Image 1 (tube, rainbow, N blue to C red):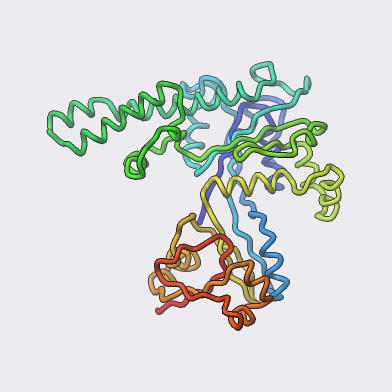
Image 2: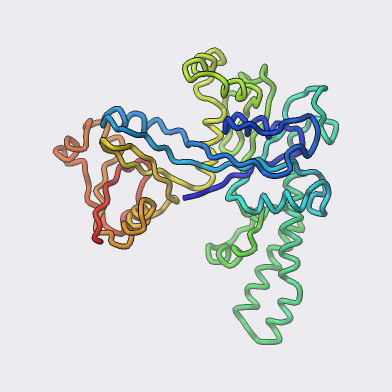
Length: 354
């Protein structure tokens, strides 16, 4: 399952520094706007301690993590929706991702220029959200043109309902509100899907703070992370043992980047199921709410087509038993059919016919 998260923000807020640390991939970082014109892309592993435990228990030859693609998109500026800066190109890159993380500058440094000549992360957030809203408004307005009159003239009730829905969405955007905050039914969301609206995408925020402030922001709200991109860049250059010691010195349980990856994964409404054996221990990505045949299909389409049943052990039960064989002996393995909804951390074997 290929999923992409776009990293956006105003110029010089630390996006590219964060991206470099995130992917350990060299990108062009310079103290001026628009140094990143084409989006840089990096694929990163989703941290999951369960894989390491299972690998040791089964003496697996390989450990394969699930991944997320991060796209470093060049800085937006006020007026981007009207083509300011490199607005149209940037907005088209954002349209292609599945979720958005906004990087907001929350540190002062007279040597690093801020395009608005101030440090105000909430004001930066308003600028970015407004540009995304205006871009969506332009899309919806274009789709609305003459639609209701045409539907009325043709006496097409279904088409009329669709354009009335568009008008409702248009008014919501005109009020300066994100599309995702409009109360819609699942059917209505599906009807609007082809518009590819930017403000329908899952979105969360990273506040890039100064190194000395890291201990003041040890806790995070669900969609807000406080990260020092400078510290993360330093951590990315260290060996794992050194990085762990450095985090302990800072009083942190895990790196900001590990938290960022996990929050991105959660915002995409994804879960992980696991397979394990002597050959490999592996994490597989599926949408929350997926049933057993769809989970099997994540491994191979033939598994979904010929699905018979799933042999499932909850991760905690597997660890308690110590092995698959012992879990079977203790009655901890369940046989599940086509209607079983796979849970995060389920260890699965799928039976299928060719």
